[in-house]
Amino acid sequence: MRYFILYILLLKATINWGQYHFSGEVSPENAGSAIYLSLVEDYRKSSRVYLDQIVKKKVVDSLGHFSFQGDNLTSDNRIYRIHLDGCSSEDSGNHFLGQCNNSKSVLFIANNNDTLVFPTSFEDQSLCSINSTNPNSGLLLEIASLKEQMAFDFMEYPSEANKKLNLKKWFATLQQVGLDSNEPLAELFVYDFLSDKRNETYGYYLKDLAMNPYYDALADRLSATYPNALFTQEYIAEINTDKNLAGFDPSSLRLWDWAILSLMTLSLLVNFYLIANRRQSIRSRRKALFAKLSPQEQKIVECIFQNKSNKEIASELFVSLSTIKTHINNLYKKLDVSSRDEMVELFKK
Image (cartoon, rainbow, N blue to C red; front, side, top):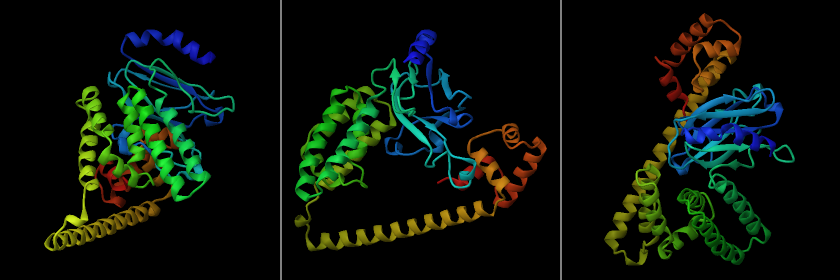
């Protein structure tokens, strides 16, 4: 709490200047670790870190403090992520952008005028609470907590009857929480979870979509609040497609329709197989390419993923600038690429 008051007093003026300031503290044992600020424009990419989402990278100082500030964010609310790379040097060949067991991250809502502080909790837990000038910043943490309660309800007694009752209860609960927040981004976060094809909620979602006016009303709220955002158009396209799927009646098909549908289904399956097989081949090739690199070359490739300059890479690896240039030229030859961008694209997932 003391840090929150101090930051608010010192940084209140930045709000009037149209600048954001996101700061906080983590355990001092993370000193020197990389920490990233990402913009999550695509709500379907909120579950992990993506290279193209990163806005800034900082390093945790010796006391465990970090800070992001500037004036380049949007004036409208957006979903952001702060991600702490807690990976050790032993993990360096097995992770991208700090995605290992010791990493921590938090999703929150903010805009270019906000001051946020992420204090450590009473158990020295980091990135699990928010103090903010934006009343909507902590909504995603609240929803995440409700999702955990939902999971507990499902595990308490895993019968089919209990599942149906809990689905009805939690769809209504989560949608109402999002609606009461008056923040369509929070509703979009709920929608992403409930409509995820990987979740047990998906079947109920299709039934709910067919009879619940909530989804069209959310489309109207998104269009009114974020009319030019890509996620608004993505949401509208998704529910329109899913409505067609939810309203599909197999009994209405004639024999000829069944034949066409069967051919289309077979074609889709073949295409999915070919695409999956091609992706697997590409992944295997990338993995084999990365494994052929020396440990030093692997470290340089990871630094390039993090958009570090040659000078920064040389400083981090304690070698000369000319040595780094030589390594990079050798990497270009080994990987058959001609630029950093091509190298990133080669290993991009």
